[in-house]
Length: 242
Image (cartoon, rainbow, N blue to C red; front, side):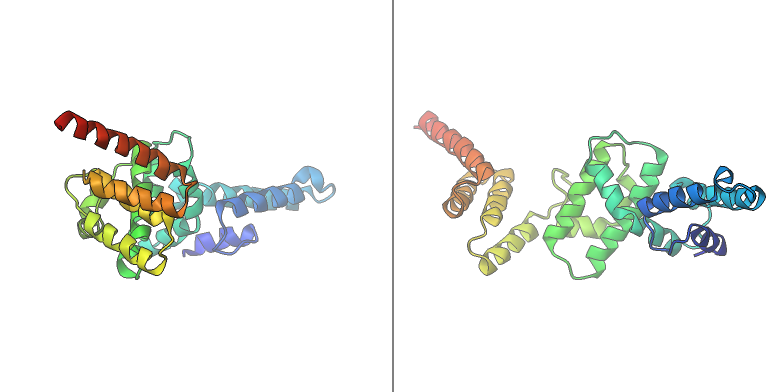
């Protein structure tokens, strides 16, 4: 972390793990405390501190500006890592975001996430969660072309749903099968397998998995809806071919 950033964090009385919300709260507290109008008889000193507080806040809260201050890529990644949960919420929200700052934040966000899954032993389910988040980000303007190219091995291993360049269903099926071995009454795992087999157009197996999910949890509405839909289609097709 650069010396300039160290000073800005010190001014706001924060450590380097502070999130954007922490920065906003610290700014409001200190701005109120050192506003010249709140310090009669000591306006000059308060004004100098107030100016520094505003400067520190404007830099630390501005992700586009802060990128110019980092001395290394690791510094930048460390900063964005602290704000990952905020970014994930933005991606999952209904807000329409497609500006350059969003692209930069997503780049750091997904590079860190992909490195974590690739280098640390994590499940395929976690990998698919990240892929799903990437797809939602793409709908808001995030350009994935570069990162897909850079992490080609990852996508070849874990798959990229609906993208013909990647095939990871076999690994995902194996992951859910292992999950069922450890948790035989896991209705969601059977439902997920049904969904995958339906994607692969293996309808008989999909129906069986949806039914197993319902046997475990009769109130699993998604499994019931999928089972009823596929079963009706299956019966209709058999009648037409009879």
